[in-house]
Amino acid sequence: MAQIVFLPHHEICPDGAVIEAKKGESICDAALRNGLDIEHACEKSCACTTCHVHIREGYEALPIADELEEDFLDKAWGVDPDSRLSCQVLVGETDLVVEIPRYTINMVSERH
Image (cartoon, rainbow, N blue to C red):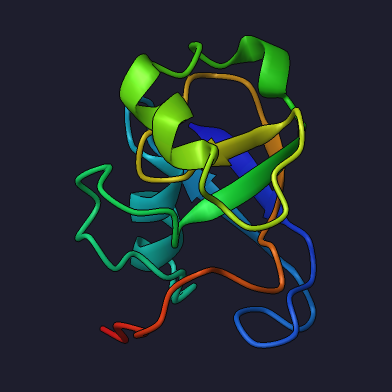
């Protein structure tokens, strides 16, 4: 299992969080399974940008984004070179440090 450190986010995890992720599990699924209510308006089908995150450490160990993910990242708020859609990133054996952006471009928030 890999460890994912979530940096503090004003709503989702004000104090930050450290969780365990199963190999092959998406960052989004791991977060949700551990009580971190990350947005995912398209139900994790790579059809929006609400689960956009920044991989602050461990990015180089992840599989590269496919063309569809890259297309959606072009539409996300606050994208930088370490941006990924958390529903598309499958965790390997490398620990990650993840930052959830303060804002999304989502007009409607789905809270599960």
